[in-house]
Image (cartoon, rainbow, N blue to C red; front, top):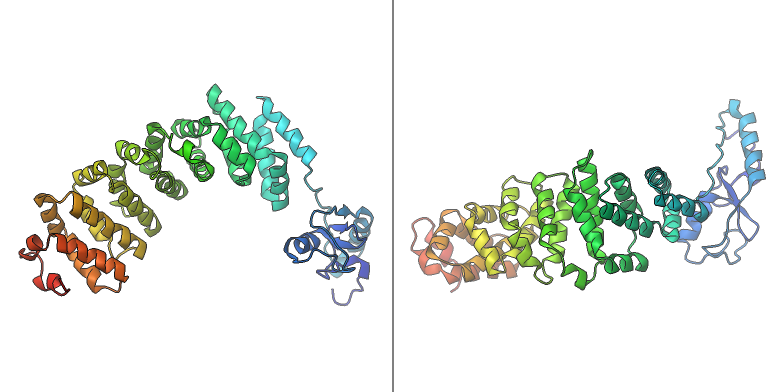
Length: 405
């Protein structure tokens, strides 16, 4: 290609490559669309690269069809010299086309096909997703989901969930829609309980969308979450639908457990037992970190600690995770043992802590390369019941006496 004389006006002034989709800016200079759009996106001062005149980032770029045809003809003539023909670029997605597709949401026979077309367009590029956002597609799809919920219609749920997740942005319009329509969460809860042909995809995307909904929900909405909501979330966790669904389930419960009576509702849904059982299956470390974090939150209430202690493997499981996963897990696991030692310290519980190695792990924390505050927290737990533990033949006395009392 170096030996071929390429007409200068075929080259983009920015990339210096043959233009595939020439567009003319308001300054009269023609650029390749991809190059000028990237320039306008990242430039600190949006000026025309050639003329240095002001060039607003939202200014129109007019397709130069004549130049494109000349370039295509020249490429065809020089194909024998190794020049590839430039394909005709697709027309940019217009707001009018998006609105036309949204109108099809109103018709039962057309809306699934419209959702599929929109998803394909959204996957093409960020500009299409931006156009769809400005046209209000997210709102239209959310309203469609709510309508399916009210009519108990499952057709198209998979396509709608994939699309709303693809184009979701926490805009003021979306936030208002979430917080003004409390049945959206009920809708997503219902979908989690539905029997689907493709349950992994549907339930995974439901959890991903639900997490985004919770992120923009206001306090009033979060405080009204129902017991059924938490039961369905835990069912997703128990069934191990997918890694994404599991992570979303844990993040959602961590996010909402501090509001209203949610902590009690999560405990009532038998969450602690399910979380311990799930953890005993040795999930990946990032999931364990979230799991132990949630358990620490739930053990801060009496009902949570009682449910925790009813599981025969709870203390052993938490002790085993210390110094094996991450500093954050160490912090939360020691915190759980601290709560148990302070508020639920029957003789039976304290002896179990000794028997399953929890006391030994606390001593190891003091010796390990851990943060000073964590060592002090471990010391605090050991001091609480040092008389009982210090007299036991099950643990070396020096481990309990190597710190200043």
